[in-house]
Image (cartoon, rainbow, N blue to C red; front, side, top):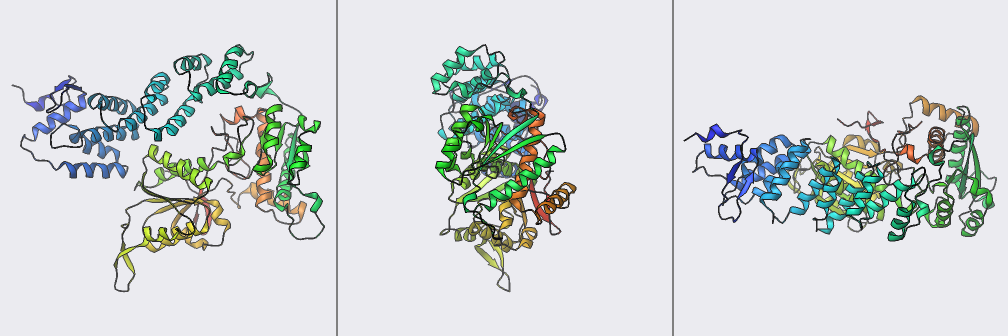
Amino acid sequence: MRNPMQLVGSESLLRMECINRSLTKVVLPFFVAITFVALAHGVGFAQDFKKQYRQAKDLFNAGNYSAAMDAFQPLMIYDKNNPYPEYSSFYYALSAQRLGFTMLAKQSFLQTKKIYPKWDQLDELNYWLVKIYLEQREYFHGWQLAKEIKNPTFRLEIDVLKREALLRVDDVETLKMLREENPQDVEVAFALAKSIGKQVPMTDVNLLDSVAQQFGWNKTDFIRSTAGSSVFKEKYRIALVLPFRTSSLDPSPGKKKSQFALEMYQGMKLAADSLKLEGVNLDLLAYDTDHDPDEIKKLVKEEELKNADLIVGPLFQEDAVLVHEFSKTNKINLFVNPLSSNIDMIGKNPYSFLFQPSHSTIGEKSAELLAAKVNNKNCIVFFGESAKDSAMAASFRQTAKKVGLKIVKSEQVNSETSADILAILTTATKYDEWKNPKQFKLKLDSIGSIFVASDDPLIYTKVINSVETRGDSILVVGHENWLDDNSVDLSKFEKIKVAFAAPNFSAIESKSYQVFRKKFLQRHGVLPGSYAQKGFEFMMVIGHSLKQYGVYFQEGLSKERMPGILTSGYQMGSLHDNNIVPFVSFKGGRLEPVSKP
């Protein structure tokens, strides 16, 4: 009889008899290896399965995936005293996926499904398999498997995976076949309608009619003019539909009600003059909404507005309904508010965009940053009661699951419950001889990061003060808006590790910023404020986009990044927002970009 160790690494399949199980399972070569390694240690070898599993999970949670695979392997063998074979097989596969061993991960997930067809965690396993299928462009397998997922909490995440996958499908015929197999899938239908609308000449008009009718869509929203993205002009007309409130302006030196709109306009005008020197001619047409619904009704009836190549404004969401309708009807691109991250500003208008990253995108990119920067993957999330905070936190949690962060606590807080932050982070269990805390209920270095999805000083100041009290190695991620408030001494941001999502960050020592600052000072006699700076950057990026891609610049910006003058620039994401989110932190008293390792 051959020594079992001679079979280790054999490519032959091993048939395992699963004691107390009704099914005989065929297992993969890696199961062969671990089975005989276990036998080599002797039949009577006693194992502490709970301890082994906890150690393996700790390695996984710490991002040490290679060691985690080694630790999970022996726990994948069936033993009547081992309650963890399904979980170990799942985390073995997930560790492989995190390491980039996609084929091994896929094979391992499939084998786990085959051996444990009634496991109560199959929905999560299927989610990861769907992700792998779609990344490998196995769309039909991915869509079919997605139907097996019953847990409603996965539906939103599956829809995001589908949406991202469909962005990579350029072939109308593939989308037609996907729709035939999935006639009720709204993501497939939407992608198909968009793809048909791009056809020149359009050969599938009847199919577009059918899809639009099925889902109650207006088919004209999907049809680009035959000129489409190839409309280039000597001069582009940009309608600035803004609340200048000229009726209330007076010559006094104090700030006006419409100060932010006026400063933004000054920045835009300076950009238009700078672009003219580059051969990009923009005709800025200023219309005063006066933040008045009646004025907006009059404006959208103006025949002149139909000749605009782009509309900017009216800044406020409640004022934008009629402008959205005008934009859709006349197929004119629209930025309701270049300063806003509120995805609701876009509405259901396919010609509407955000210039800023949406709150969801900020949450997503924050999770990706932390996954890349911290070794300890345990993370806490604090967020406020507003819709934007909830959206940011939800996107962060969703992405965290994909990139290997472990959310140990996600807490919504408000002005009345913000003290809970102190209780969570700074409840002491041990003190030194001077009564200073030296250990906490939440043990030192037990978490690697905190994401704060809020601009509320009541929330983020308590986080900052708590982390300072703890004195451990927590990385805090917040938003650049914190820097506009005086609630925290800026030195604290450097003392503890705080990174800010900063889509509007401009390095003030850069040559481009100094040129902008000098030109603005020469023209207006004052230094530019943040609104002037944002207006300038917006118009510079849009002007360059019009020059390079024409009137319908969205096609180009969805594929390529447009460099900024003062910022990192713009690339259109799947949400019609800016997908570029740089991060900054203090070093030597100055804000500097945070680079991923």
